[in-house]
Every structure is written in C-alpha cells, then in structure tokens.
Image 1 (cartoon, chains in turn cyan, brown, red):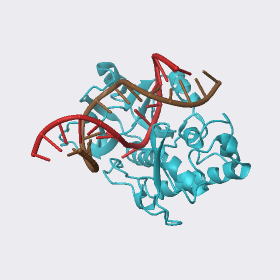
Image 2: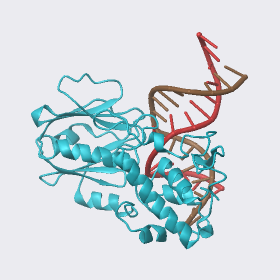
Image 3: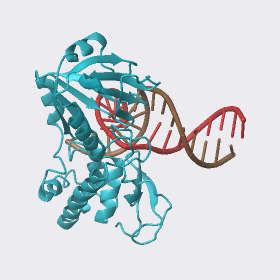
Length: 270
DNA sequence: ATATGCACCTGTGTGC
DNA sequence: TGCACACAGGTGCATA
C-alpha cells in the first residue's frame, strides 16, 4: 500500500519512538509466505537495542546497535502501529514487538505480501544495489536523465520501475504525470528534455507535498498512530475516474497500463 | 534485453 | 439476498 511518502512517515515515527529502546520480546502470530522463520528470527533480535530506522525506496531498515539489520517491506496492506502491553491481537496481525518502557509495536498485513527479514551486511548491500535514486534527494537533472531509455517504454511503466527511480508507486506516478501534463502512455522517446524536466519537478513536488500531510490514505493506509494520511483530498487524478479535472473540468479517464489502474485528464495531459 | 501476464493473499464493492 | 467477478498504495518470476 504505502509509497515513499507513507513509508517515510512511518520511518520518522518509528525512529522517534524506537531509537535507543531495547527489544524485549517478539511474538510471531501468523506465517505468511515470507514470514520470518520462527525461533531464529526471534533469537536474532531479542535483547538488541535500536540504533536508528532508515528508509531506502519502500524498504524500512531497522539498524540495531550491535550491527544487526532487520529489513521490512509493507507491500500493499502492511502496517506498523504502536499499541500497549494489553493489546489483544487480531486476525491479520503477524508479529508483536515489545520494547522497553512499555512500547509495543504491531505488524499487521491483511494480504500477507509483506516481509521482515534479518539480513547480513552483504545481503543488505545486494538488496539495495539495484534501486534508482531517491527522488527527494536527487537533482531534477539526475531524475530527468533516468527517463530516456528504453525508448519504447511507456513513461508510467518507467516511473513504477524501482530501478529507474526509487519509491514511486501507482498513486504518485499518476499524480506526477498529471502535474507534468504528460499522458501515462507516452513512450520515453516521445518526451522532450523539457518534458522530462517538468516530470522530475512534478515528482519531487507531489512527493514532498504528500509527505508534509503524512501521505495518502486511499484505502487502508494508516501511520504508526493509526491515523490516516491527509493527502487524499489533494489528489488530482488518482481514484477520481469520471470526476471533473480540477484544472479544466474534463472528466478524468481511467485506463489500464501495465496491469495497473491508470488515471489521467484527456485534456491536460498530452 | 524488454514486455506481458500471472502469482502471491484477503477483503470490498459492483452488477446481475 | 446471493453469487461471481473485478479490483486494490507492490513486486518477482515464468513465459513470449
């Protein structure tokens, strides 16, 4: 579910509450396809102290003081929500993490696509190696230059490819393309230098505006306090099929690109 | 090398 | 009301 602004919101909140806290216990509740494997997972973590939580693309990287690294991906429906010691687990919870000072964190995941893995330095390195630049750190030029090849690729497909630029998902791909005035089906070869520049700029803007509002809750997403993100009301195309474009009143159209629902304004985007 | 399509899961909303 | 089907913030792999 979460894309860069949502994952970054969660990272900040985890970091704030978990830094310097020792993990006292881990309770595994449900085993999905990539569930942490039982006792080894628990033994690798219990008694360790959190140093910091980082984010790369949509991955959350938990670094412990002793060098242990835990990597998490929430995929479509994963959540990290703080609770208290009396919390009664519910159906879709996958693990409970109890820290010092009574801080408890619930990992839940309705569709069970997500994962949490303890990884060695080498494995982490290769996991991170393929990702493209972070859009909020990279320059416009660097981002624009990623959107040149392969020439026949549709621009939306390129935006969703994490090796091209990291952290963009279905919502922000559509939103950035609307802001840049580009149809999602345009081939990269049909983008001018100016088009790519506008798109890079649009990406940075939409991601940072959403981050400032703690992300978008289109459906399930909540932050670690269980609160929804506030950016939904500011979306211009995503989830607005049939509604009037906020810029020109043309009804927003929905098509399928790369098996993903894709929203655009037939007038503003060419 | 790139594109397509499906698979992984569960829940919800729509239309007949 | 019931049922079948499409669709959902993501990605990885098998096949074309």
